[in-house]
Image 1: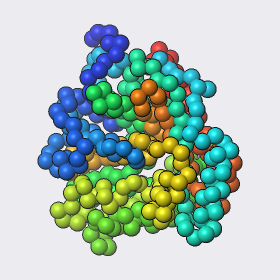
Image 2 (image 1 turned 180 degrees about the vertical axis):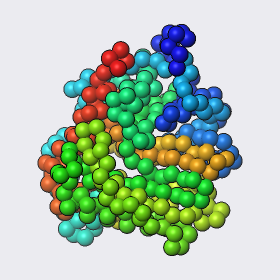
Image 3 (image 1 turned 90 degrees about the vertical axis):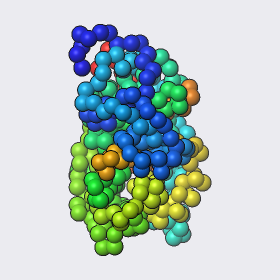
Image 4 (image 1 turned 120 degrees about the vertical axis):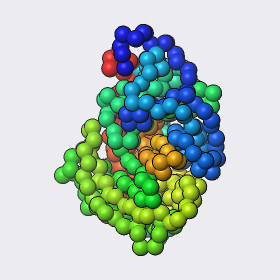
Length: 348
């Protein structure tokens, strides 16, 4: 962007999106119906874990941001967050999950909490997106601003939910988190393999028989302040399968639900006191004309809910989980991004 082309407006309000190095402008239409995506165009996509999906078709996708389209971020209080579960409640939820596992009801479940604090609407979520991109580079980062719908999302996700290239579908589930590679446990590896099996099963519902396979297992990926175990599963789509069927087959992502998925979802509903909203959903873009897409799992994600800024954090629970260690993992995942959100735009 040409810094000399004029000062930024204090509060730009036009809809826009960013995914990687592509900036979307000139909103043409918005729908909640995934079937509309099949009619063509390139769409920004938000499929919440709980809530109404948003598919926004923009006519202009550009390699640099337009001048004056991003406002400022005033920063939030690092210590100002409240949590849907305090440490004691979260550790109790972990124990209840372990009880469910011992009873054979589930093998693994992802238990999450939502952090909240008051949001100053003079701040622009796209400015927070800029801060996150600079301070926490992530392979599936992005931002979305549609004021008339109350949609404000800034995402620094390291995890791919789904990519598409022609008929090839791919998923890269993350399971296993530690500060350093040597701190990854056997529990982390077992959990990753378990979710890979679940993802293979989900993808088999929309891919051709025999095409779904794990092509890369237990890759250690480094991110700011932590490491993850990442595996890759891919398959070839059945002929004439559309996005509705793809999403019905694979959503919500197995890495943030658990196995078996339906039982894990029931357990999550019984244990988590606040709905996840966009957190743990899908966030990214679909190009219907080119038959390409990149949808992240919406983790490491901030969103605005009326007058609250929210951020979710969670951990995968197995029989081998230690409640305090799982709480500590949720804190580890949140700490670095909370530091960034506490910055203002002039501290970038």
